[in-house]
Structures are given as C-alpha cells and as structure tokens.
Image (spheres, rainbow, N blue to C red):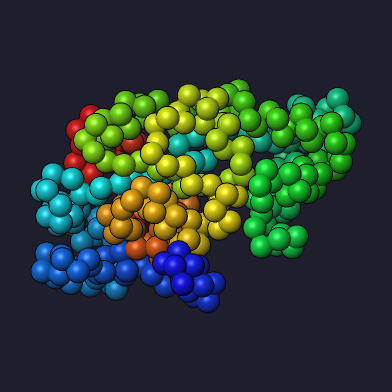
Amino acid sequence: MSVIASASARWRNAAPCVGVLRGVISCRDGDQRRWHSGAAAAAAAVIEGRGPEMWGLKDYLDYRRSLYDGVLTHKALMVDAVGTLVLPSQPMAQIYREIGEKYGVEYSEDEILNRYRRAYEQPWGRSRLRYVNDGRPFWKFIVSSSTGCSDSQYFEELYDYYMTEKAWHLCDPEAEKVFTALRKAGVKLAIVSNFDTRLRTVLRALNCDDWFDAVTVSAEVEAEKPNPTIFLKACELLSINPEDAVHVGDDRRNDIWGARDAGCDAWLWGSDVCSFKEVANRIGVQV
C-alpha cells in the first residue's frame, strides 16, 4: 500500500486531529539527534494545548532552522486557495441575486445566504466528494437550493462567472512579490485546495498560475481536506517529505488539523499569520 493510500485509510477511521503530534515529533532517519531535544519540548507544548506561540515563537523557529541550513524553517510552503490566496470580489448572495433577477429569482440576499448555508452544510449523498471533476452536480444543487431557481441557463451563467477574473481578487496584493522571493530562496510552492477543476482556470485568469510548482485540487486528487491524502499528494508533487512543509490556510479543521494529520506544519491564516510577507519572514526569507 502506498504512503498516500495508507494515510487515506487511517484518516477514514480516525478523528481529524489524530495526527497533531506527528508533524512535531516524527523524524527522518538521519535527523534523529537534531530532532530529539526540540521535539520533546514541542510535543509537551502540544499535549498541554499550546502551539508554537505559547511555546515561544522564536525558540520554535530557531529549532526549525536547526533542522536545515540555519536560515530556512521549511523547504516548502503550501497555501489554501479560497479564503487565503483569493477571495470572491462580491458577496456570493449578491451575485446570485443580481444574475438571478432576469431568471425570476425573488429571494433577498439574506434569504439566499441562509438557504445557501443550509444547503452547503447538508451531507452530499451523491458521492463521497462534493467536488467531482467540474463539480456541476453539486453546484446545481447549491444554486437551486439557495435561490429556488432550477433554470439551466441561470446556472451556466453563474457557473461561468466564477471562472472569470471579475469574480475573484487576491487576498494579499503583495503575494506575487513574496512568492517570487520565496522561490528565489529555494522554497517550493504549492496550492492545496478543496475546489473543482475550475480552479486552474481561475488561477490563469488572475495571472498567478505560474507562481506555484504544484497545484493540488481535491476534485483531481479525489480527496478533500482535512483528509491528509491531498496534502501528501502535494508533497509528492514537490518531491519533499511532509515534515519539511508548512501549510497556510484559513480553516482550522480543514487546513490546520488536516495538514498536521499528514505530518506537515500548519499556520492559521488570519491568526498565526496575516500576510504572505509575514509567512515569508517566519520561513526565513526577508521581503
């Protein structure tokens, strides 16, 4: 059984946070001595419910640098897409309402938002994944549930809109400069996202598809965060070990717990870090 398949099997039978300690205390064969003292302190901090900030961020980052060349804390950075790298340019309910008016949508934006949330939180029974290939069946259900409109032309117009540059903008206007500096310093970059196959089109529309060494999309990998399989696939594409990577995302369950279950480090966007410049500085690259 491959490492990815094995991880997927373990995840299906375990709680999402089963591997929280793994990214702190696991070690490569040749690094046993370097990991020992720092790992013991880090593991104790996690057991007591304290992260790197409570343990002492400087000590934590110094410890990470000691694993490599004394400069960088990680060999690779993985980032979430929606909510971390990009954001919708307009509120979802506003767009559903504006495009839907000519198709007879009468719900208010508040009603659309509430119905969207209820629909999105329901178990998706047609497959084990929400996003399969282009995700159309799932999104047709979401759109019709949110707006009460099942018009196929309405759905296609809405679906196509979310592939354009009008629909999205970068969270951090300095992202390109930061990612360029990271790659120049030898840090590998990847996206790890729960999304359908439109994500690559969105990245091209925003002219940021060539910033990354790998793009790992749940619809293509057939695993959605927090399943560690998607993180392990990204590590495989980057040709790195999971413990050499840090993942940054805005969802504690999907991004933080999921990445740590895979053996990666993880920082919560909007809490641990609030800009990509801050991410780069933590890694050891000054921008």
